[in-house]
Length: 158
Image 1 (cartoon, one colour):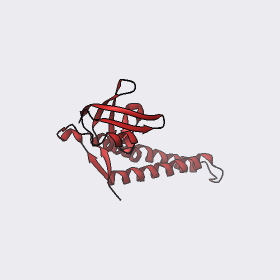
Image 2 (cartoon, rainbow, N blue to C red):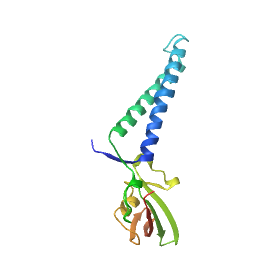
Image 3 (cartoon, one colour):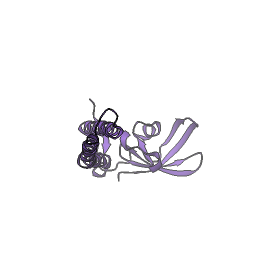
Image 4 (spheres, one colour):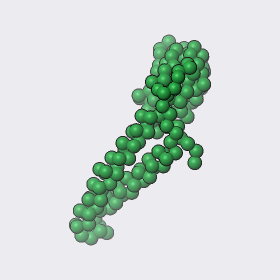
């Protein structure tokens, strides 16, 4: 399996979630199952079936996170010298040439992406258009609403 790029913050968030699932959620679910068993007939015991289903989701998420972390290529741009080029993990400020508004995005791994927090997935069309470009470069991106043009006004490795 190929390596998956991830920021240091993204990897830490996954590690924290994994720790929480293993030390808090897993024991609670096991306790819920044991409690539901005490209620008798398992065939008609909704609490038991709900707890078993929750256990399946929890164990699946644990495996998913462990897989992602084992294939993660953690990239910390704060330890790199900023040459003005947009790379994975960089924070890009760009002027939307249509609206004359400045927008700032950070290019992150797929699991970290959250457009509401201006975190762009590295595989998104906008992030792909930014990567490799430099300060003052202009880019055009095809969006569902038509072509959008941007001029890069800042590239930070923070």
